[in-house]
Amino acid sequence: DGGITQSPKYLFRKEGQNVTLSCEQNLNHDAMYWYRQDPGQGLRLIYYSQIVNDFQKGDIAEGYSVSREKKESFPLTVTSAQKNPTAFYLCASSIGSLEHNEQFFGPGTRLTVL
Amino acid sequence: AQSVAQPEDQVNVAEGNPLTVKCTYSVSGNPYLFWYVQYPNRGLQFLLKYITGDNLVKGSYGFEAEFNKSQTSFHLKKPSALVSDSALYFCAVRDVRDDKIIFGKGTRLHILP
Image (cartoon, rainbow over all chains, first blue to last red; front, side, top):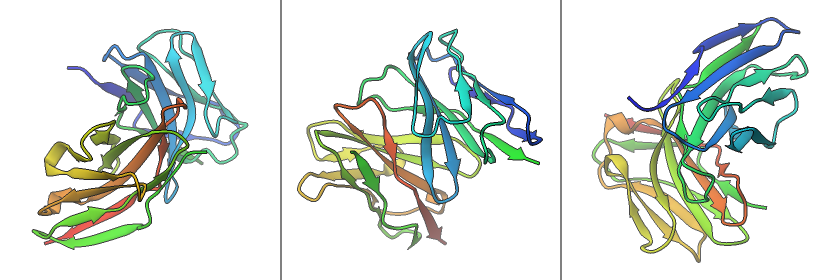
């Protein structure tokens, strides 16, 4: 059963803590993306990776970090430098980074800072 | 810079009536256009896309969209709405010269029984 998974579904963080959100895909996709969704603001791109061991900053990368050591995995770390991390985080993948390839999304992780 | 606008935060339609969710875009080059749907607490699902060719694109669940180059629009349509179509809809655009896709802010569609 192919797809893209994210874990955990819900995550609670204390201020000052780093947390890592998992994203795994078995679709053999080259490109992977992380978005942040806030009410009324749509999706904003945090980081993206077009190939293993390479990634680029998106529009709101400050306070976040990623790695792409394996094709299947693209974890996102929310650091203590991110001042307003409470949001819904979506991971996506596409066959390649060609312009016309649609993205496949995971179910999301809702992060809440206590 | 590329951008996409969804001018309506919410659209209400009676079940069985036709629906339209509006989207306009701005890109420097040729656009690639997408529609996605999101159900509560879920990820986005791809509905349809325009790359080139026929201006009327058909997609999943009976949805279609019309590309209008002169009006820079890509409105989502369905001839007869279902209550199960109620969800959040996102339009997205990608410039052929850029490697990022830009999403609109979303339009919440309510289908009234």
